[in-house]
Image (tube, rainbow, N blue to C red; front, side, top):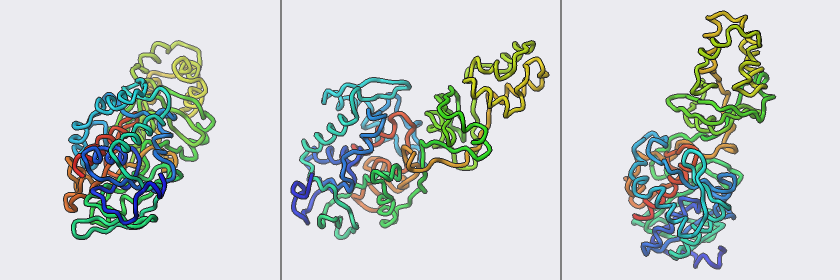
Length: 399
């Protein structure tokens, strides 16, 4: 896709889509297949790079259990309409039409058997089938709207469109082209933006906790982590900077800074009954805990509670206290590891200013916002890709 294939500068289109990620390509393909003349503009020189690196290179392209409860937003019901009109089964059908082999992992997560490049190729083929034209790589320098026409100034000359779709994503992974462009366009047209922040992101220990647990990097614990109404039972992973793993990435979207995490280290168990059954044991607490927790962590945790002593040296009250702490170990993160390590951006274009049916701004006809740039953030596990497909389809049907 070069200047030669982009068409003449200054050409007028029915739909201009800025951003050729998951949502942008879906929207462009759907609009083009309706007979709309579509131009897709992408400033980065590699197509679908965030798709390529997702899911360990195999693209966790949707989840079987998608529903509104799996998304965070200041306007929680907004996502319901789009998700109901383009479902995981719809995208699975598209994947199967392209004979892309896939498999289900844990918790309804669907991955390509081979490579995420298969999904990129599918989206590119759908755009080609729809006659979508391209400008890539092509920087956008500005947008104006006058007389019902959007004018977009680009590094390859001006283009004009009746409808404009912003699919530029959030701020995650800036090294592959993330920018705040979409938020700036929203603000230019008087649309509010919910302050963005990193989500699905590892959390950092404060210096004291890092000194205690920092040498456990690589140790994993099956845990249930909760904060601000979010609760997830998955793996918790210690890193050289703090905590990661699916449970932590999930809860990071609920963590607002300054909040304590409550971590159940023995989910589904009864720590009090267990320690009571061991009350006569002369084994040290850390050795007893090592039967159910990684030994190195059991040692560090017991030492942190001043409880690296024989279990029979603990009185009933102390055993109850320790049992309670095993089910509710509190950790105060010092922060996140930022956009470079985050999988998505929480916040974005305020959906209260958008139509849930068309994804268009209610006060700026035919200006649409889709995908990660919008204040709809899914859980880990394919939910954000499904939002890209669903919101892109909704806009593509109406742009």
